[in-house]
Each structure stands twice: as structure tokens, then as C-alpha cells.
Length: 304
Length: 319
Image 1 (cartoon, rainbow over the protein chains, first blue to last red):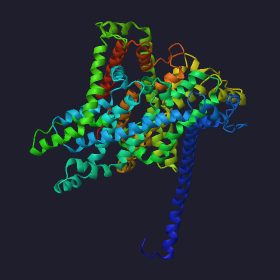
Image 2: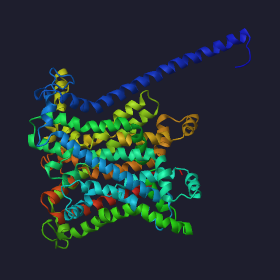
Image 3: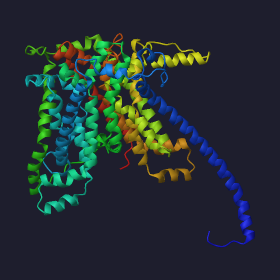
């Protein structure tokens, strides 16, 4: 309102406005009430979701007897003994299994980054025969369950003498068998402006150079998402590690935990929870550090 | 946006037929860039796929040569009561847990979408279980939560103690044939965070003007959901549905850990992949396991095909 009002008019508008303001007030009460209800629902659901995890963390510091009698988070007795006991319960200290898992994860991450980005560049930027057909094959291979090919893979790796090595878990990653990441990077590369690579072409750069100097630096978010998801999936992977690793020296964290569960049964929940917590810490750290890339990665491709 | 829409796109448009000199030059470069993928596709994926088809017609124990057995393995499939049980377990799990999981994901995504303070925190809290859910550690936790002296029973006893009206019986949930599968369904629903994040991203893409226009026409909240939100989200619901069904069919770790590798009690958690593992790597019936693998492939392929076919009737593509 730019015009000046006479006092009379001003009085009129005030009279007219008062009921509206009143309605706004009640409306905002309703909105506020709804907001409170919504917050309560979210907080209750959130606590239900997270309570088992917090409880496991709390229980890992409780003596065994209290795990079964005190459902609360704060125990009457606090002990770190579960951790020292769990750490040494198997043939090797738990650090040995953590190290094995880290080796497998590092190999898988490196393999996926290299091989999937190479394949993705070809699908996103190169013209070649039957490109659409190969692309469709790649998409379909994403949906192929590993259980369908695990038996011949096992035969193949045993012929090669690779059973009880980390090779069956690492080498396939260098061959872009996790096609989901090829797809993720294709999506990303398609978004890079073509002018950039065309300018480089005119300057005489080949595809290798364009890939290394232009695409990869620009694709850091996609590479980060690939690294993070490969880390999480490989760290959690149980099925293939269970099949390819039977030598206790080579056990990774999931297999070590399973062996622990088998060998002690119900008798030492505290120690088992302690080692379970230890096994989740790397995941949790990756989650905290990489959350930004994680959310974007899920949102663009629907990774789990 | 995602694999499913890429696949539908591929089937729609034709291939451009022109071939220029630069295309031939690209062909050489493409061969180099795709070399690792081609090797992997041949040796790790398609080769084993065909080999398992061959092995499915043989008896093979890994130590002696495969012996051709014709359709014997496939005939056995239809007479094997444990196989039928494992199919029943897996289908029950898929058809109960996937809809519940997606409903929870969609519901919470809609609550979070309409402007909530602390969105990032809620999103993290709801997403965290999806991240950890497939781990052995969480399966171990589940086994304790739903055990005889587990947290759930402690909670039930506490609840029974504070009020006299509703008294709930306690159980060893994971050791009771009627309930063990239910605990695993709950575990899958618990991991609704990742479809929720996808739904949230989808809700962000619905143009605000549709809602404004609907408000002007006096549409109710339910009407807006039914006529705007739901149709606009159908491609994403479809994508989540396909993905989660395929994932759920392959559930292994949780069932293995919770049942100690047996699929018990009374085969009530004998998931298909767990039975496949037992036959292949426990009994070394590699031929039979291969036949099982192909049946799994056919089932998953058929489910996906049905999904794609049915999508014509309910999935709405804006473009």
C-alpha cells in the first residue's frame, strides 16, 4: 500500500482487518497443532527405528546377565570387558578380520572405480556398433541375481586355484561386473556439457585424455557415490565371502561374526554385541562422511 | 531417471542408422574402454550363466566330472517338498514385506516433504537402518531382540505389568515356526529408508503449480493425493517395486544368521537362496543347485516382466 490513508479510512480497514487477523491466528493454531502432532509421530517412529541400535550399543557395555533383565539404555553396571573378551574370542584377534575386510573392500572399491568409469564413458560418449543393444545387456545384468551364476563361478575359481584367496572377491570388480555403477556413471557423464569435450577434441586431445582430464575430475560426486556404495555393499556382503573363504586365516568380519555366533551360541551376547558394534563402526563413519553423496546417489539411481 | 525408465525408453525409440567415419574411430576407442566390461560380461556373467544351464541337466558334485542326467533335476524340483516350502516362504516374504516397506516409505516421505524442521536429521535416522540392515551384525541383533529373553519380550512384560487390560503372551519369536518369518519381515520393513529417500526426491519434482491449480478448484487433500501426487509418483513407485521385489527374492544373510544356517524352525525361514546354498555348498549337489538357480532366474524374470506389463495400466509417464 503506497497511498496515504485518511484517519477515517485507516479506521475502516482496521475494523475490516481485525476478523481476518483473528482467523489467521486460529488457523495458525491449527497449523501449529498439526505440526506438533507430526513432530510427535516422527519422533516416535524415529525412536522405534533407532532404539534397537542404541540398545545394542548400550548392551555391549553391560555384563551378560543384565542384557536379559534391563531393557533400558543405562545399565546399573558398566563394563568394557565385553570388548576385550570379544576381540580375542576367535583364533586371531578381531583386528585380523577387520584387516581382511579392509583389503577386500579396498580392492573392490578400486576395481569398481576404474572399470565402471571406463565402461560408462564408452556408453555415455562414444558411438559404436550395437551400442543400444550392449547398453540394454548392461542394464539387464544389473538385475541378474548372483545366486544364478555362483555355482559355475565357484567351479571357475576353484579351477584357477583362487579358492581361499581374496581374488574371487576382487578381480570381478576390475571387470565391471557391478553394472549398477556403470549405469550411475553413465547418468552422470551424460550431464557433463558436450562443449567441454568438443573443445578438447579441437585442441587435439584423444578420448583417453578427455576421460582422464575432463570427465573424471567433473565426475567426483559419481565416483564418490560408487566408492561409498561399494564400501558398504562389500563390507556387508556375506554370501560370496561365506562361499569363497573357508580358511579361518582369511575370514572377513561377517564370517568371523558368524563363526563367533556358531561357536559360543547364546552364552556371550555381550561380547557378540561388542564385536557387532565394532563391525558397524566403519559403515557408520562412511555414512557420516559421505552422506551428501549417498543421498544424491540413491535419489538418482535408486541404489540401496 | 532410473534403470526401469531407461529400459522402457529403449524399447520405445528406434536406433539411428547413420554411420560416419568418426563413428568408426569411436569404435576403436570404445573397444578399449569397454574391454574390462566385455571380459567380465563373458567370463563372470554370461559364461557362468550358460554353464549353470548346462550343469542343471547333470549330476555334479564338484569332485568328479558332471554326468548328464537329462531332466532329472527339473523333475526333482517339482517333487521336492523342501523346495516347495522354500518357495512358499520366499513368496510370503516378498508379498508381505515389500508392500509394507513401500507404504511406510511413501507415508514418511510425504510427511517429511511438507516442510519439517530437522528434515536432514530425520532422513538420516530413517535411512540408517537400510544401510546397516543387510549386515551380519544386525541379523545377530535381531536374533537377540526376538529371542526368548530378548528385548521384545522384556518390553512386553513391562507393558503387561503397567496395565491389566491388554495382556500379550511372550514367545521365543525366532524359535517359533509361526513367528520366525514375521521377525524377518519386520526386519525388511525396518529398512524402508532407501525407498523413502527415492520417494522424497520424486516428491520434490512434482511441480508446485499443479497443487496451486487444484487448490483454486477447491480440491481436498485426499483428492490432491489421488489426482496429483500419486500419478506423478507412479514411475518411482514402479521403480521401487521392481527393485525391492528383486532384492527381496534374494534375501539370504538375515535368514542364515537368524536360523543358524538351517532355515528353521521347521523350515519356516528356509528362503530360496538359503536352500540353494544348502544344496550346492552343503551337499555339493551342484547340478540340482544349478536347476534351482535357473528356476529362480525364471521366477524373477517373470515377476519383472509381469511388473513391466502391468505398469502400462497404472504407471503414468509425464514426458
